[in-house]
Length: 312
Image 1: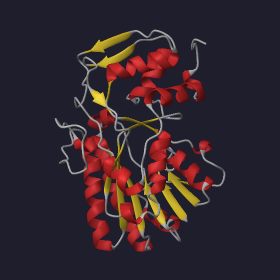
Image 2: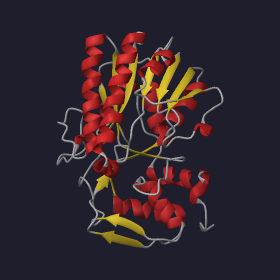
Image 3: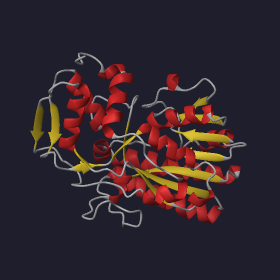
């Protein structure tokens, strides 16, 4: 099949593009390189630098395409609180531009990468896809709004759509920005450098950490699966891990004691968040295979950023 991946040089996009090429698909990748790295892409991926809001460019890229994976987005929750206009412009505006271009180019299928963050605070866990969305940040709002556009426009224009709500994805190659870095990469960086792990609140808040390969497997399973059309699916590990427990796991992966600092001033976000993945298991055969200890071991062994001063 011919595939276009927006955000195709990003953390998830690169892994997806390389996997699809290995499976024999012809892949085009669009990315503005604000956080992506095209050097990590397989040479067989046709890369184009550009903005997902550039409709004329999308028209040219969508010619002959069978399926679009829409991964282009700004993804930092704390950053979205500071820059809500940009998050709305890129995440929501980019989705609408892409849908419009797909209609014009008569592309039949869209797989949209949403986020478990859209659920917001929920007492009942794990969270099923039918739980009401109560987003608590501009990032989460942008994902909820984009989902609504995908569903509505998909029905109006006859585009087969699949929405995957991905929880806390992690793995080798995840970006490490100077501020607002994802928690697993941040903890590994701090620990390897001999620093302290700064934990927001008391560390009892929980998250659902899902390894990169499992997310990519779920994305790939949607490329031509009829059962998934019109569906919204949770993609996580289905395992609830506290941030304090994550710190323990990092300590074990590095085989060294790690000092912790607890910051009551930092927002800990929602208290609990773990996805019910039974629907994805039933419809697309999704089954996460990489546990958190194994995922951390793979990150430490394969990512040079996390190998300095690690005990042997």
